[in-house]
Image 1 (tube, rainbow, N blue to C red):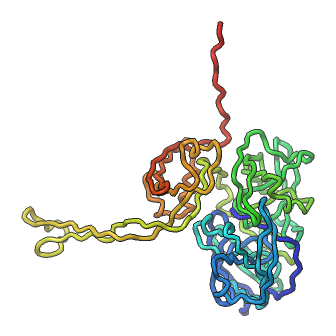
Image 2: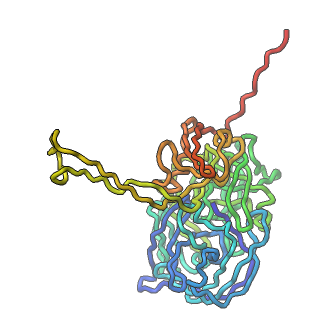
Image 3: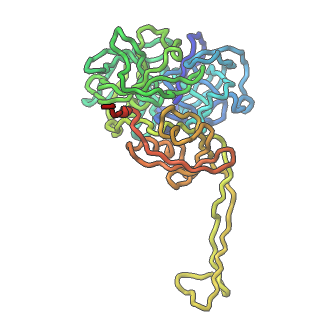
Length: 450
């Protein structure tokens, strides 16, 4: 998961318009780990961007060496701070860039190029991501997000017509530094508490809450400490637990996951005093959504993902796509006989069959353990950060996406996991069972002396 917050900066630039007679366009996206990845063309070069309602200005990950290709110019150096406990991050501000998303185009767009390599989203998602874009699209256009069919529909506000929807709920939006906030309700220990939440499509979690004893917003005793995500200024850690319910008017999500980030990691996020947390991708994906910043409203309609159960990573492992490795694969298998190729069952006892197995060396993704939760099954089994996972339950990991491999760790408690890993050139085998992270530890009984 990636979370981002920029400072309150002042900008002057163009706006997005749609260059067709319908003043509307539909764009397909990829939904990866609850995040929306869209194609964006910058100065004529097509890239992949994360669509993030929680980011003020477009950001290019400059460590990917795209500046020269994009012909970025008119730059000045600035420093930004976001979530996490790290230092300020150096960035180059550039103006007068041409950005196109489908038929939507902005001829004078400000953007930022960031050099911090730890902000590379591609290893975390297992998919190339070159940057992040958010507020500029939402503030200029009405944005429909169809999570179930994975497409966006962008429409100029003057051309948009609302349809009657008896199964929809509409909410007023509030804005702070250009970011949208929604009023919701959480139920914690049977107490209903109104909350104001940032709508954060750039976060893959369910819900973040900022602990506040006076409001009754606090973690239950059944929690575990975990890595929560990457911020602009470093990693974010905190507690994970459950709440009784999250309510968005008539839409109620029961037994929902929640994270309580450490206060030191979110100091900049708490500058908006009324904010109680964030509503992220694992909730948003359960709805098809209309964002209308012009009228300051958002419309939600349940989709096929609404009833998907909430689950936690029961292994304690976080993987990242860490480069590539050579894999020996069967390229072709040729069956030959003296007189030619054997077909069907024409072979007879006197026929000599030669199986000529040819191999090729291919470059395949390497999935490396980058986070390992303390007291987790994987940690207790002896796995270490830096181990490259070669096989999971006897299946080569390179045959699957990073998301598919990680999905195995969200299965039911008790499922047996077998991993083959490469540790500094040595192949090792490990096994463990997935465990409920909230499972209470058994207290050993001691026999008294009579």
